[in-house]
Image (tube, rainbow, N blue to C red):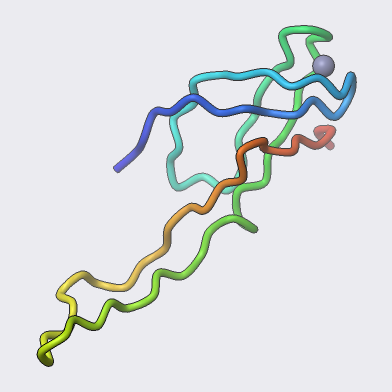
Length: 83
Ligand SMILES: [Zn+2]
């Protein structure tokens, strides 16, 4: 499953913010390019993946959703200089 969404990135090079449509997949990093200075940036997604808490329903029904990970992304994603 993948989601296509508009994200805001903070350029590591010129410090401006820009928005791009990106598809989030299981990959741990996103590669983006700043439209202002054309610097490539890498976004680490791993720190934003959180283990889903198991939902316990009232009445003894345990949630039947399997525990998994969800992406908790900040409003503005920091980019890093590619290595
Ligand atoms: Zn830039």
